[in-house]
Structure formats: C-alpha cells, structure tokens
Length: 555
View 1 (cartoon, helix red, strand yellow):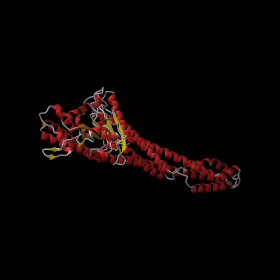
View 2 (cartoon, helix red, strand yellow):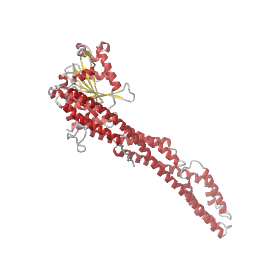
View 3 (cartoon, helix red, strand yellow):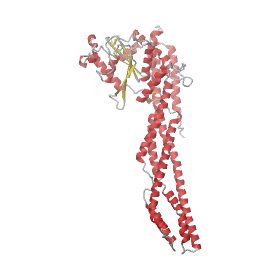
View 4 (cartoon, one colour):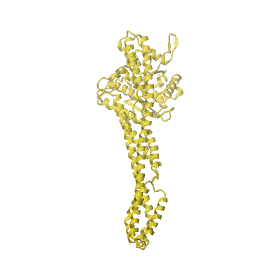
C-alpha cells in the first residue's frame, strides 16, 4: 500500500493508523517543513491474511518548495504506482478542479512508464499503448482529509464513492487541461474508492497529534479511519506482476532496484523489461529450490543399498514430483520451459549420482560378505588342504556352500550378482590349479570338469546380462515416466494460468464496457470509437486464448 500526496497533508499519520501504531511509526512533523524524504517502507504481518505481509510505502510530499529537483515528485508518484497493489492519493479539503489540477502527475505517466519494450530490451521508443496500464496499475483510493462538506447532491445523500465518481464526470466544452486528469484516472484505474476524513483534532492539538490518545480524537475521524483500515485489510490484493505471479519480499526488492536503476540511468522504467529480469532471477531460484527439495527428500527416503531397481525408481518418482511442484510454485514466464528442462536435467544427474552411490554401497557390502564367507576356503587353499586326491570335489562343495550362504545374506543390494560373478572369476585360476593337481581324476574327467565350470560361468554371465538389460529397460521407462510427470504438472499450471488470465481479460473488458457507456452518456464519441476498437481487440485475444493451448516442450 503506497500513499502519495502534497506535503504536510498527514500521509504518515494515516499510514501509521494502517500499521496499528500511534507512536514509533513513520515520522510525523508539525511545521511547514516537509518531514518524509524519499520513499520509506515498513513491513508488518498482515492482520487478516496469514502468510501475507502488509508492506506500507510512505512517500515524501509532493510540491515541496524546498526541493531542488522538481522531477523528483513525478518519479516518486510513478514509483509508488509501480511498486504497489493499492495506491492512496491523499489530498486536503474537497475534490474540486484545483485538487484535480494538483493531480497532474497522473497525466505524465505515459511519459514516465512504459509497458512494453520496443526493439528488444530498449524502452526508449513510445510503442506502448497507454490503455495497457489498466492491466498493471493498482487499485486507486482517494483519501480526502479535513473534509467538512455534506455528502449531498440535489438534496440526496450520496456515498464517498459516488462523490468521487461525480467529481470525475467529464463535461464537453471544458479546456483539455481541466479534463485530462479525469480522463486518465478513469482510464488507468478501473478500481476506485474514496474515503472522506474529518479533521482528527483541533488546530491547537494537531501540533501534538502523535501523542494524543484516541479518546481525544474526533469521533468522525476515528470512524472513517476504521472503515479505511478495514477496507485495506479485507479487500486489498497482493501485488501481482504480469502473468499473475504474486510478488514476494525478494521480488519487491528486485523490482525496486530495477526501476530505480532505470530512472538513475536516464531511461524510462519498463514493466516488460522488469518482468523479464525478475523471471530470470526467480526461475533460477526456482530451479535451485526444486533441486534442493529433491536432495532433502532423497536424503530422508532413499535406503542404500536398494535390493531392487523398483525401490530406487519409486522413491525417485516421489522426490521428483515434489521437486517439480516446488519449482512450479515459484517459477513464472518460463518461456519454452527452459528452466524446467534445467530442473529435469539436474534432478536426473542427482538420481544418477544416487544410483552410482547405490552401486558402490552394494559392491562394498557384497565384497565384505564374500570375503567373510570365503575366508575358510581361502585358508584351505593357502594351507594346501585341496592339494590331495579328491581335493577338487571338496573345493567345489565348499565353494557351493559359500555361494548358497552368500545368496542368503541380506542387504546386499543390486550389485550382488555382479560382485559374485567377479569374485568367482578371480578364483578360476586357483580352481584350475586344484583340478589339475587332483590325482583321483583322469585326464578326461578333468576336461569334463573344465567344460562344466565354463558352462556354469557362462550361465551366470547370461543371467547377469539379462538382469542388466531389464534394469536398462526399466530406466528407459523411468525417463518416459519422468517426462509425463513434468508434463502433467506443467499442463496443470498452464491451465491455472490461463484461467487466471481469462478472469483478468474479463475484468478489463468489463471496465472498458463500463467506460464506453459512460463516455457515450458524456458524448465523447471519438473516444467511444477508440474504446470500441480496443474492446474488439480484447475480444479477439480472449477468443485466441481459448482456442490456443501451449505445448509442453520438455525433453
């Protein structure tokens, strides 16, 4: 919520009321000298919406005669609009022609803010349509201070909102400079509200206003201040950027830096460029958050070594789905899903690292089991226990028993067949030596045993290759599943974005239709024609949006 207005009109006091502070809030002053310089920000937990922060922007007063740079007012006005979702204009007395003339800053917005970049990232050319402001500008609230008139027209009681709309009524025949502020307020700010405040205290007490307890304030002022606070707390929307993305505290900081840097460099702040810059920052952060979430869940859910590849794939799928959602919750304007591709690739890399780690843990476990089970057999080989007649059959029986016990050992993991095959291969030379030294066997029997050993090794190798092939096929299916998971969650987000965009189109369309009817009643026929063309273009966009669906291009 930003408040802007002439200096020494009580803006800071009103913002302190929003903050729920009677003392210690925005600095107040009681002299003719302006007190607030620049734009001051104060963040408070939202009193009505959990998970939201109420960000109050108090600005230096406009029209201060002591200012050396008169352009400063215009930039403060423009920045307040760009950074807020609710814009409060604070003035004194009544909404009359003089007050509207003081609001000339609104007529300068087309020269101070650009919606679209022209020629890529350059915003200097005037290619932005002023009506586009209606898509991005905040809700407009006119706070009229020290209001002493009766809210009546032709003897009929009217509301403060009706008072504002009557003041914005346009009349043919008036000089353009007297009409242009009304035109732009109505054109740029479709959502408008008005509050009229009586003087909070007597002139003598205003000097010590900050120290006055509420019981000494004007009851009419207190009542209107409560209405003002309730309206802000209950109806003010979160700040959004084009595309319907909610502005977080981090994003608001980046927005402020982007716009201020543009102003200081002599350029014109460009909404489109700011959004592109924010998208790059936020999408990179979204990838980081998604990967971090995957790592956190993987650390909790993966138990290594896994016995079956399905165990790895199931946990990976669960972690990946959560990571995708974390990414999609933060990302926006990810054109062609470039950042989601980065997420997918980085998650795939993390999963491959987990698979390699699983293999290594499994190998280490299997080798430890094999060394323990074959310890006695190794000792007998070293001691020559098998170098006797019939020693080869004893060796085979001991090896077979060790292999059977190896198969029964738990928690060996996926690499159990590979580890066993490699281990038995390493014992083939010793087995051949024992075979050749066995005098109980004839030459023919020894040849038969050699062939039998080769056949068994070949069978183990064939079984191992089948298992590895099945794992490869499962991994290929996993890649397809991963793509479908990314696609499904992305399509859900696209559909939600399209629904939100459709609602925004309808909001703007309704505003244009209302303004068109009002202009017809006021007989501004040329502007009615201009609006009719814009309405036709908007209807075309709505129709095109309904018939067009973006495709998921993740690969």
